Length: 119
Figure (cartoon, rainbow, N blue to C red):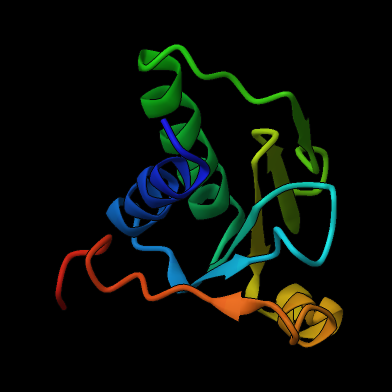
């Protein structure tokens, strides 16, 4: 599975749990950390955890496990590291505060319209 296909599955999982303002950033030529960032918001701690659990469950079924999981103590910002894709799940105000999209503004945003269900 390519990094973009993995990112697409992650985006679909977030969408299935009603994640908000989902962004997929291609950072492969900006950092050696990973190829893609998936950034999304949730309105509550339970929603953020549900999104993370959905991602973990669906990818685990494919034999893919997170290398690292961070943020479960406070659940304001959950991070899941899948090597080629790093997932950032935020509560809205925390996302605004850290503004990863601004920090990585030089990264190419990938069109996710074919990865999510139409509203």
